[in-house]
Amino acid sequence: MLRTLAVTEQGEFIENIPLHNLTEPSIQWFWVDFDCPTEEETKLLDSYFHFHPLAIEDCLHLLQRPKLDHYEDTHFFVLHAVDPSTLESDELNLFLGPRGIVSFHLNPSHEIEESWRRVKENAGSRKLDHYYIAYLILDKIVDNYFPTLYRIEDHMNDMEDREAKEKLQTLINEVYEIRTDLLRLRRTVIPMRDLLYRVINTDKIPGVREHIAYFIDIHDHLLKLTDMIESNREMTSDLRDSYDSIRSGRMNMIMKTLTVITTIFMPLTFIAGIYGMNFENMPELHTRWGYFTVLVVMAGLGIGMYIWFRRKGWFD
Image (cartoon, rainbow, N blue to C red; front, side, top):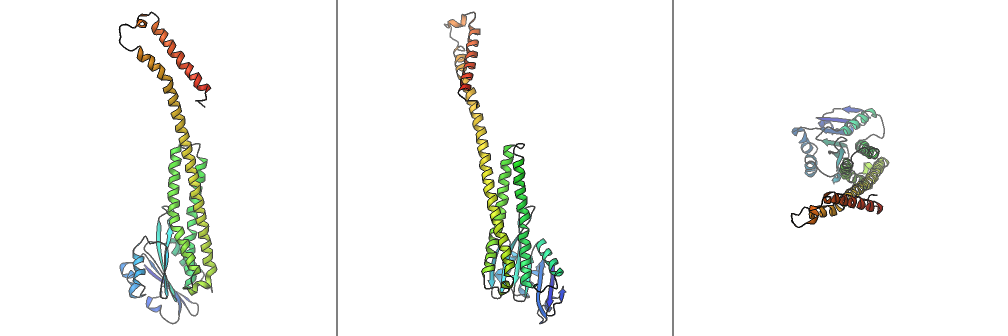
């Protein structure tokens, strides 16, 4: 679907204006949104807007890192929105030119829809132009990172409350899942932070300077997100080390208990082995009370070793 929004020199908003009218002198700026475009609509990037072939190629090939490229008077943005349920990145492309902005996304974008709605609601605002629209889209994308990160933090806090109830291996598996989620989010947030740093420090996009405070605010949010992600990664490392220590401690206790039991049964097995030999000349075999005597000796030996080990603190 292809939709357009344009503003005239008189400040009049026109929605769904035909593309061929965008070049009229009365049009002050415009926004064209390629929402899940068809193949024919995608060809307009080249045939009508004449964008650089490399930029068009990046639009059609996903898994690009967030970046900013400059092509003559057009500036190409690759942005990543995050799906809160899966933490998968969804690519969104912007072409920012001197007279308008073009957004391109192969999947439905909640951020674009919200920005489109806000633009229509603030139609009479003087600060509203296509550079401010770029800010709105970036701001919506970055704001949607926070709920995802807060959900991860709530999960970690919930794990601390369940430590006494859940199995240790279950908690360890959840820690590794959280670290994987944080890594996915980190791969998106850090390149976006670097992109915003370039935006606020470049002189190649003159219109951004008029709204520089807004873009700096987005950069500050990304810095905060980066710190939160690193802090949570350190916390998961501490939790992982703590759980590993607890698991190692439990394993040591099990091995110590098995070692004590084995040590107690070693002399008993030795005695049983001796009297289990089938030699004829073994006087004890013909003693009336020999069997009961050996049992008493074995029981006394086992109890004596248990008491001695307990005094040594082997069961503490």
